Length: 86
Image (cartoon, rainbow, N blue to C red; front, side):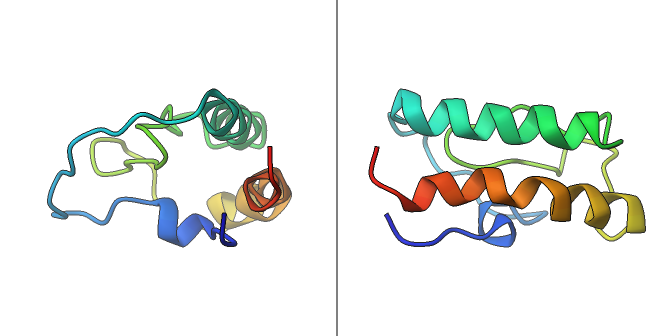
């Protein structure tokens, strides 16, 4: 799997909805760990993954805040596991 960045995993506001695909359990587990990390670092409303992405459009999460960016910096290493074979 190619290196994924959080910015590529976030659904852009107004983006077309893509039908769900079967996501491997390993990917779901990594994404769920990232959600837990973001919440533990102060982004209480960070959503559960939707497939292999996060949809912030239906939340009150502001990805431009200093608090969000600090949590992202702490948690991005979790997503690096997506780069390695399972």
